[in-house]
Amino acid sequence: MRDSYIRYGSQYAGQRWTSPSAQMFAEFKTNGNRTRYEAATFAKRRQLAALVMAEIAEDKGRFMGDIIDGLQSTLEETWWGIPAHYPTKMMRREDQNVDLFNAETAGLVAWTKRALKEKIDSFSPMMTKWIDDEIARRMLAPALATDYWWKKAGMNWNPWICSNWLACVMFCERDSVRRQQAIEQIDKAMQCFYNAYPDDGGCDEGPTYWDRAAASLFDCLYLRNDGNSRDFADAKLARMAAYSYATYIADGYCLSFADSHGNRMVQQPNVMYPFAVMIGDKTMARFAAYVAKEKAFMTNAAAIFHQSGNYPTLGRELVFLSMLDTFVNEEAAEPLLADTWLQRLQIMTARRNGVFLAMKGGHNDESHNHNDVGSFVVYDGGIPVLVDPGVGEYTSMTFSKRRYDIWTMQSAYHNLPQINGCDQQAGRKYASHDVEYRLGRLKMDLAKTYPDSAGINCWTRVVDIDKRGVVTLSDDYDLSRCSSPVRLMFIAAHEPRVKAGEIEIGTMKMKYDTTILDVAVEPLDGKFDPMLRQMWQDGLWRIVMSVKGNSKRGKVKITVARGTSPYRR
Image (cartoon, rainbow, N blue to C red):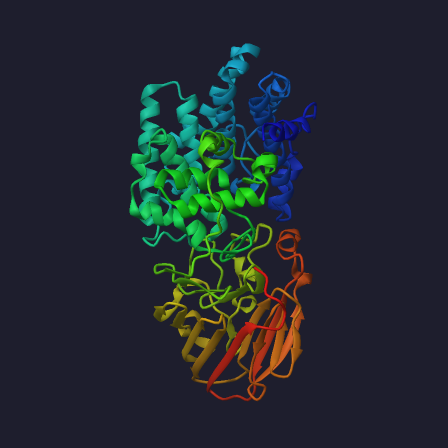
C-alpha cells in the first residue's frame, strides 16, 4: 500500500508546474466550454496531492522540492476557482470570490501544511507564512466577511465549502478571535444545511453529489469535534449516511438520478468508512470495504485516492488512513437491500430474485433537477436494462435558462410518456400527486407534471415487482383531448431486438400488446459527449412506443422479465 502512494507520486517527480492560461479561462464566457480549464486546474491539484501523499508514505524528503515548487506555483495563481463561478471573463487578484474550488484548493494547501509543516519550515519558514497569508486573503477573510448565499443553502455548496473553510481555520488561522468567529459561522451554516435536508436522509442531488453533501457535512463534524464519535449520535445523520447504500444497485452500479456524473463505484471509501465508524453503521462500513476490495485497495490504494474527487481528497485520505488498523479487518459486503422508501424524495427501490427496480416521484424543482417525475429503472442484478442516462459534461448551458434544452434533462429521454406532444416541465408545481407506496410497488398521478396544454385529466402510473422479479408498468390515463399519439419512452442500455409483442434488452424482455402499441427504436450515441460515453460504453437506445388511435382514455400494461439469457449478478 505504501509503495502504491510512492509510485503514484513518483510519476510527477520533476514534472513542470504549469497554470492554465487566461484564454482558457475566458472560454466559458466566449464559447461555453468549462471543461478545458477545469481539466488543467484539476490536473495541477492532482499533481500536488500525489506528491504530498508520496512524501508522507516514503518520509525521506525526496519529493519536497517538487512540493515546494508546486506550492509556489499554486500560491502565485490569480484565483483558485473555476470560470463557471466567476462573474467576469478575466480573473482579478483583488476579487477573491469563494466558490467550491477556491475553497477546495485552499483545503488542499491547508492539509499539505498540516501534514508537512516541519519539512516546509525546514526549507523556509517564509513558505509557511506565505501559505497562511494566501489562505487568509483568498479564503479566510472573504468567507468570514461576506454573507454568501451558500451559507444558508440546503445543497452541496454549503458543506463542500464549509468543510474546506474549517480546515483552513483549524490549520492556518492565527488570530483566536477570527478563528472563533469563523467556527461560529460554519456551525450556523451547517445547521442550515442539516435543517434543510430531508428527514428521510435522501439527497435530491443524486448519489454522485451525496459525496459533497452529507459526506461533506461529516467532514465538518469530524474536524469540528476532533473525531469524537459521541457527537455523531443522531438518527437523521444516520439516515443521511445510509443514502450512500440505499441507492446502490449491484456490481458497483448506483442510481443515476439528477446530475449523476457516474453510475459505477461513485462512493468513496475514504469518507464512507470514517462516516460509518462514527455513526456505528456496519452495513456502510462493509460497503466501504467492498468498494475498496473491488478496487484492490491493499495493493493499489493510490488508484482509489486518484479517483476520490475532482482531484484527490487529501484530508479525507489522511483521516481514513488513521483508521487503517480497523479497516483492514472489516468484512466486505455489498448492501443488497430488499426494499427502501425515501418518503420525502419519493424514491422507491426493490430487489426481487436478483432484479432491481427503482422509481421516483417528487417534483421538478429539485437541486440539479431533471424533469423525471415518475421515471423508473430496471437492472438484472448488475446488468443495466432500462436506465436513467445521468448527465453529460457541464457547459454554460447547464445552469442557465437553457438547461432544459439539454436532452439528458428532458422527460422525453427518461422512462416517461409524452402526451399530446408535450413533455414534463420544470418547476415546483410540476409534481406527482396521490402517491401510494407499499413494498415493491409505487403508484402516483403524473397529470400535474405536464403543462395544461398536454390536456391531461389524470395519468395514473403504477410500477411494481413481484417475487419472481417481474416488473409491471401500468399507465391508466384520461385526457381532455388527443391531438397526437401518446408516446411512451424507454431508455435501454443494450440494443433492443424487437419482435412482435416482445423486445429483448440484454438479459431481459419487455412484453407489450401489439394491438395497442407500435414500436420504434433510435440510438442515442450521437448525442454523447465524453462523459456520457464513459458512463454508457455500450451505448444507449430510446424505445418509443406509440399508442394506436386517438382515444382520450386508455390503459397500457408492459412487463419486463428475465429472458432466456443466463442471469449474472
